[in-house]
Amino acid sequence: MMQITKGMARKLYNEGKEIMILPNRVKTDSLLASWLVKPTDNSISFEKLCDAIFYYNCSPETGTTLVYYAKEI
Image 1 (cartoon, rainbow, N blue to C red):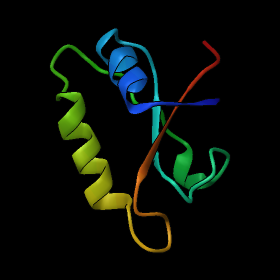
Image 2: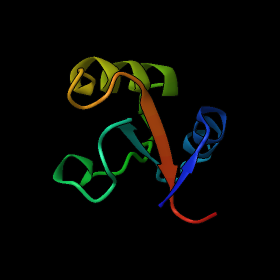
Image 3: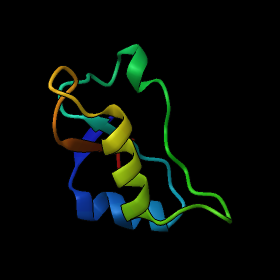
């Protein structure tokens, strides 16, 4: 996995490719990061997805901002 910008993550998500969105203190090999996001036909928008991940997963322990990852491009 390689870290990418939010703009690149939005582009890949809109193209239907898998990305990983995590709080900034969570490592990609931890149990909290054992899932990838891939849009479906009736999926929510990228911004709503980021808002939901931020609301439910960000805290002082896990991190207060989001980071975005993709498989090697």
